[in-house]
Length: 315
Image (cartoon, rainbow, N blue to C red):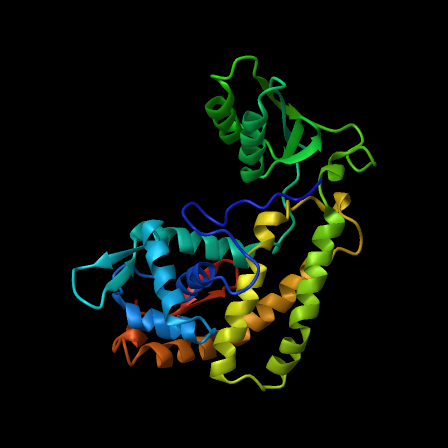
């Protein structure tokens, strides 16, 4: 049994191991641009991604793919092309940045409610069974038993619609959506058994190990603007997977000690400390190809109420 890994967002590329240019560009655009009015020259994007060792051909391929996915669009018909974030992408980025930066700030409000799905597919329906599991995973469900899936909370609308779409026309397909409570929620046969919490804890611990030296360097003032852009983006690129793979279970269902808070504290310290330096470096890199870059490039930070907000820039 494992924690689900849904797509990072509708239309956005899936997270991959290594410097995937699409994923990296999505992170950069989400972190440092907050307006659909900004006209972003293609060579500025090439220069930005060049800071991370991405070749020009790979950068242009990432631009093309994000255009096809609807995250960015070409403005006008000039050459070289100028891109802009779509209004839908800006709204999505704001929502996602808030999600990434506020995740884990406070324990979930817990009512003891779970949405439970049980389904049956004919023996020959392997493709259908796979489609059901994929749909459930994308909605945050985890498999408790072979055909019994659960997720915390009480909102069953999305999964009901998804199961209708997949199974309503399948001969012999049956499914039920239920609202349940566990008699022994914290016991060995309770809902936590559906999740690979040991694997998730290891992922948090690996994150802490990966960036602990960077935090020391930040505290000692050893990170200049050039290093700040790559380091800060790397931290966010690594952190952003956790809100999607961590089911955010209540504390009484988690093993102790649980490393999420330590990982979040480390991420926020680095992310906050390097924000202005990273923004300055991105402006410096982009300005030769984008003279008004300083008017548009900004960065997100966590405000006092733990909600992310753009800081700096005029866009």
